[in-house]
Image (cartoon, rainbow, N blue to C red):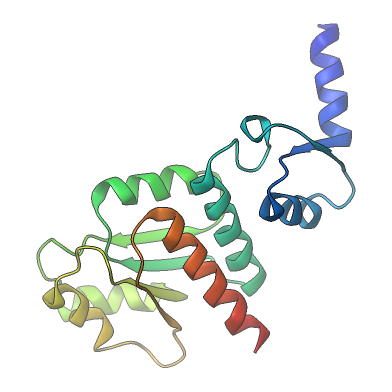
Length: 171
């Protein structure tokens, strides 16, 4: 009981963060009123020692700052989609993920997804058949930002999208 109260008190005043520059920057922005305490990466409140988790936090922060909460992602594999969903669990970012190796979608199906989206991301270096992507990329609504990431891996996707969103927001 006493230990639980002590943990709660510490959590209300402190945040544990590793020495990674991204985690330090994210923590300072997310918890400006908290004292940041440097810990081993495995104990970091942001990344828990995972470079993928850190990259997802960077992505979520960039999307939040840009006012984007609905992302349509073309490409990637079911295991990559599961990883993204798991890492974004509890975050207000909503994802719709299109497996690029599956059947082609009709223009009407794609149009519905595009109307919902605030950002379209084309994950070009993953399985993404032209017959799938063209249903989306051929009818992008005016004003819908389209970003392309050409590197594989969830971490690379998240870092690539975060960087492009930040650049677009600054211009």
